[in-house]
Amino acid sequence: MIEVKNVVKTFEGFTALNKLSLHVPQGAIYGLVGPNGAGKSTIIRHITGIFRQDEGEVLVNGQPVFENPAVKKDIAYIPDDVFFFTQATLRDMMKFYKGVCPGFSTERFEKLRQAFDLNENAKMRSLSKGMQKQAAFRLTVSMCPRVLVLDEPVDGLDPVMRRQVWSILMADVAENGTTVLVSSHNLRELEDVCDHVGIMHRGRLLLERRLSDLQDNIAKVQLALPDGEELPEDLQVLHRGSTGRLQTIIVRGSREEITNKLATREPLFMDVIPLTLEEIFIYELGGEHYEIKDIIL
Image (cartoon, rainbow, N blue to C red; front, side):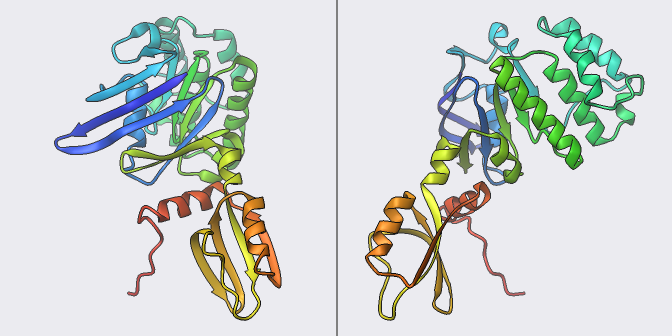
């Protein structure tokens, strides 16, 4: 559904995107993660047709996005900083969206009233950031887009409303086959909703996989080895720490492969634990010199 092929984008000599390629399958919820400055917002602005790439292709449903109204009418976008007309109310914005978006559903907009407790006659500028995000989500979902692009969609929302937003989002994907690309720093929440993940760093993609495959290919192992025994040399160890005889290692590979190799050392104790998305993010970027550093002040 969304294809980014070898995209390059520079700003005054700074390379924001460096031969970036990614693929978001139709009907997927794709989590795009990375440190600040990785290029997430830049590629989002290409996918939504705001920026034009210097090199490469940005395609949605096989068609280029930039200056292509036929493709862009099926794409909806909620940026981190939402924008509304200064004097407009939510009801005014609904009329505006309905006038410019052929697929806007007034019926869906009215149904979503029960999920978002908003004063429809209050000026948008008078609402809190969280309430503005709710309004943006209600308006955008009512557009019935085929592709929904979200940049920090639940930032500023309370825990109950965050769960409400994700629930509506997942229901829309299940019922209508909506394709969702979401960028967020809240990896714990992404782990609950995403089925595909891409990790960006310095304008390129470090890896892109189904979340289940990603979690199956890296593990945390706690073990105690007999005196004199060392770890197998062919283990792909990303991180290693120890407390007394108990070692904790982060290893790339399948659970079966890891346990078979370690079993040759006849460990006194061994436990293999799946990593969270947040831990995977930290250790994958650790290989790119983005590890947490101990600073003595």
